[in-house]
Image 1 (cartoon, rainbow, N blue to C red):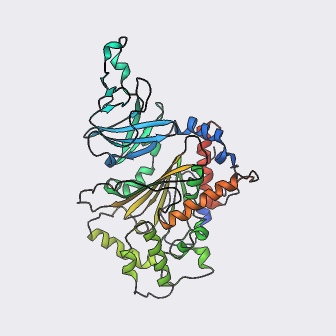
Image 2 (tube, protein in one colour):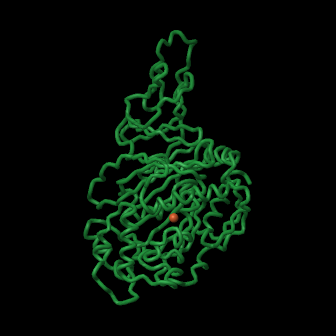
Length: 441
Ligand SMILES: [Fe+2]
């Protein structure tokens, strides 16, 4: 599969804008992406068989299961995986299936000293070894060694716990590859989850992923963003199965600015509204109010010189971040199902999971993180909140999650001939190329 711009070390964010950004993106894709990839139950089945059963997936955070005996239930397709803290510094994963008659052992996250199936009380130790079979003398002789819980590969990157159903897959570090170098700069070891929601929407998981790997739509679906984010000037990088772009923040959108130039206060209003839509602190925006800089001065021109001393003074070592990285949105898609918007102050993580049978249904996990000062202990994670489909998960995410089902419905009309794509959308084609590779096509 051709990868038109495969780099491990992308250019840094340019400070001089408007340098024909299309040249820093792969060409507009020419491949075919038809509706059946999004609407066909058979295609979904093949994805489970060849993609989801083979690829490393973020199951939970180590900090979600801080105590020995804490377990997190990660379910993907038909697979049900129990991620268990079996010792203070050990996390293991098992198929959540009782080896007696096949019942799921756990049906939710929780804590228990041992893993006991409620049906007949077959019990395993936290490390998966068989502990007890009630009334064992009524069975034929049993080999305990063959009745340990079925292990699932489990590896971590800092606090992230990944699982993989394929015994032959390359290690996690190889799967993540150079992406980890980027994450290290932002100190992913020093972030805690302060907001957590799970919701769902009526669309295929890839329509969800696609919406979060192009920013072409921002001018139209998120019109407030044009005052403070340049969704024209984003370079694209491919990192193996993954991809990235950087959205310059604190500068007006070039296409929109050609028609209307927001003034200083309007730009700050828009930035404040958007940060607030993610529950973020807007004090930085407030600090910029009333400055009335000369016309043509961007928010980034004024903000960048202040961010480094402010963060350093508050106990954050940001020496690894360039000036641009102090304000820009570093966007990464971890194949297959994690979207990251990374800032100097923290990051937003969106994870999508397809429904086991229904190509029109996606579960969304939205986890937002803040970096804490280097000398401070990490606070505990916020508990997860279930939000019914269609209810609000923040005004900007609502714009996206409520839009996508209409795309799914349009695809199902039977007349849609397939995508045409701009170079803004090159990452979508890349993801489908990767899927095809897993499918053996
Ligand atoms: Fe969007």
